[in-house]
Length: 243
Image 1 (cartoon, one colour):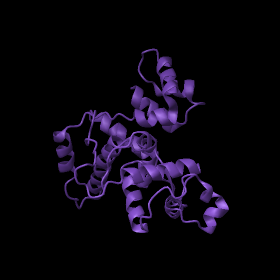
Image 2 (cartoon, rainbow, N blue to C red; image 1 turned 120 degrees about the vertical axis):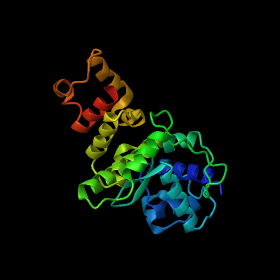
Image 3 (tube, rainbow, N blue to C red; image 1 turned 90 degrees about the horizontal axis):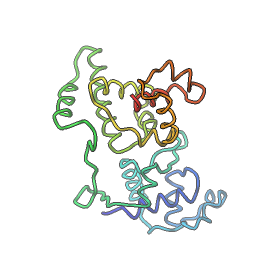
Image 4 (tube, helix red, strand yellow; image 1 turned 45 degrees about the vertical axis):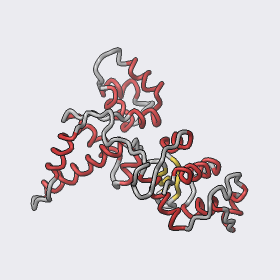
């Protein structure tokens, strides 16, 4: 089943609502089911109310799960379990491509590592390295970290926001940055400009780049020069993309 149009409609509803929506709210708006909650929030007045055909709840749950898997929707608030669309979702609304539920021909999959410095040998090596768990707790920790780094590679390939990835792995963004820097130490540089352009801004990044005057990235200088503008995580992101 091709769900391209359904995903686009879900994004349209969230955009028009101007707020995160729970699965139930989103589904009810899509199929035009007015509830006391929607009436109270005036969400039944949206132009997109009833925009979709009356798929059953399981269908919409599967469609939403697929959209999250593809990085087009994300959970905005873990506690309230509200959904919103990602920057990729915003692009998808304007330029959708075919996505099918069963993975048959027609789903436009992005290559696993486009424009990255990873090839099949790299991935094979990493997979062999994580192998089976050892009885040594230290080795187990390294194995879990290696598995997470492979997940990170794939998440970046799909242009998933790094803070969302951190949340999905139940870790801090600092740990994601640690993993990125570890990959960099091994000669594997990942293109994360899709994320830094969003959270810092392309023009601001260029301003910081110009302040380096072609020299190396020096964190002490950056803290003195930009510490009142950017927090530690943002400075580490800048160091990663500008080094």
